[in-house]
Length: 313
Image (tube, rainbow, N blue to C red):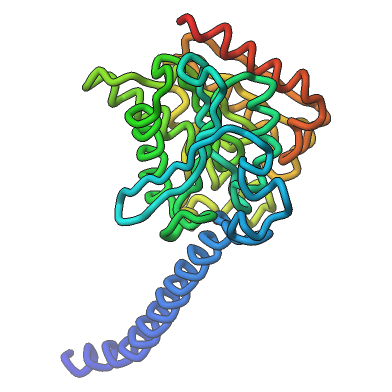
């Protein structure tokens, strides 16, 4: 009987060894795939060097607000072992004007946003704050989700603690990736206000942004749709934050957005169940990056009216 058992065991032992070898290879393969995908994910999600990393490499009028004769102050924020740099573009009556903190898009440096900032400043008649995330423009460090979230809080704290402005009339505006960053900053400030009584943002503007990164990737093809939930961890889950935001929100979407399907903006708007006021502005012929240029008067008037209607709440 024992000899028979030994023979049975001997038959299965090699197979068990083979199974272990196959299992090791599978684990090694998927481990390597995980590392590669997350490295590629980081490279795809954060693109600070496109068109030249620093503003000094830009064309004239895209290097500094000074080239546009805009009154401004340089901003430098030291936190988390890095330095963030940006600009505070201020109205003549900056102490009583509303202030918009702009959380910028992904690709390129903030100098390329100066034409937008210029028009925003002139047409909305507000102060305009724009600070580069870590690794972007002259800000030091390397971009990643946790780090940029810390940057968003540091920028918010700087605006409320260091700028000589009307702290009761400050708005957060985020475009594309910046929509996720702005939503995070807004929510964190809101929760901090509940605990400590600090002043918070008056309103939030989200533009051409996403529900979460995995949804953007899933939209590319069927395989990505299956794999995205398992391999994407820099998800920026704005869809989980929006339902808890209390102050007014303006959602700006573009019908011809070639990067993020505008339906994701509709989903974000639908998820905003707790906000005191909700506004939707859809630009049917607008694309991802230059929708604001399609009809500048209508675009900036919409933002100006949003600020005017909500500033007294």
